[in-house]
View 1 (cartoon, helix red, strand yellow):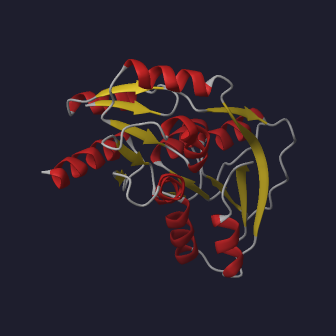
View 2 (cartoon, rainbow, N blue to C red; view 1 turned 30 degrees about the vertical axis):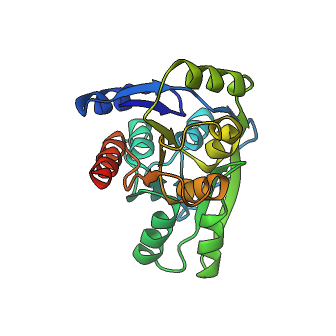
Length: 236
């Protein structure tokens, strides 16, 4: 199957899809910029939450020391990136999405544990709202900005015109929003793949609940392959 992944090229996806007989094509949807604002000072017991590599890049750029500090991250790729730069982190909690991360951290730590969430300007309010509803302190610090790629509409329309895709893969609600105008023109037989429940919700809101779709249970290249296989089995 020819798969259009709305993200930056990544050999991990190319390799994983190829092992299952699929071909990956990439088109970045977003332009991300790391902000220059200085990081906040961290209390000695405060934990750190990052839901993307961009937040980790900000911490690295500003020389923040996370040695011995407990961290919560979304996705093994983000966790791996963080461990590459801090070999002596405290407890590292990895979850598939923000909702799951909240549940695990609230169960693992006492209510007195405070957190700092390094986020993007388009990040959803899942983490602060969930933590605050449980009486847990979380400070939010915006460290990167997300904007639509300038030539997205023309590039996306050209890719969809020049090749027949069996699946279009969305990696974030923002990606759904920015690509919706062109993707609305895609044949309804094309499978929409959501990288997680929040992205699936965005697909339903933008394209309707009857759109053919599947959601990755795990936000990894292997999870994408599993989702495609699940969809194939359901169609038999």
